[in-house]
Amino acid sequence: MIEIRNVTKRFGDITAVDHVSVTIKEGNVFGLIGTNGAGKSTVLRLTTGIYRTDEGGIYIDGLPVYDNREAKKRFFFIPDEPYFFNNANASEMERYYARVYENFDSERFYEALEKFGLDKKRKIHTFSKGMKKQLALLLGVYAGTKYLLCDETFDGLDPVMRQGIKGLLAKTMEERDFTPVIASHNLRELEDICDHVGLLHKGGVLLSKELEEMKCNIQKVQCVLKDPQEWQAALQGVDILQEEERGMLHTFTVRGSREMVEAKFGRIETVFFEMLPLSLEEIFISETEVAGYDVKKFLMEG
Image (tube, rainbow, N blue to C red; front, side, top):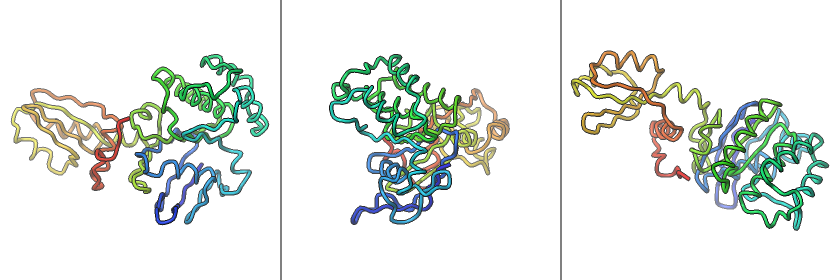
């Protein structure tokens, strides 16, 4: 488990991270969402011990991370711009990391290189941005660490490669004790892979929840009402987060279980009724608007 406890980091007069507290459970994919400048990269660099906190502490499996070799053995960090040695190829990077990480799986790394179409002898500086990202991810997965921390993991990857990497992460989680932490500005990239999502804005955490819990607790209803005025009385006491009317069609976003929402709407005479799945973006918009933020203004769509 990774624990970020009331952490603050300042650079001169700028507070990049402001009293952030987040718990990252083992065996989950944790998505850290936020626009550029929200503090994602700083949080990751604090978590990996590159930066020292000004306030608060960060612990990996109970070990303080800063200047602690034992804690740092447990993770592999991939920054937004992966670093490779000058004029190196994939084989040379594999030999380096195999010396650093005692559980590095060289055999499977080379199998994956071939599967992803990466030449182990080609100079990395001739790779495209997407190819460099793929190589960094393969090095990270096969380093054999418990945690993989990634900054903008899927940036620069085409849709096919994104799905390939997501599949590799899922397979690795099935095979061993493995917890990916993925920072991104794009909600849609993480929707089909994350178990827990945290939203950063201006250095602080607006929201940190299990994705399944959020999905189960917010429902989206579309209906055509026989009596357009009836719903206000019938749904009295129901936590309606959003209500939109387009002609005869009403769309409600409601907090509560599916069973509860179906029962409440069962009191209303409808010509048409259906419950729709919400996207991760819609859930975040609903949750943060309740907290007084207009998340649509600062969430980028990628």
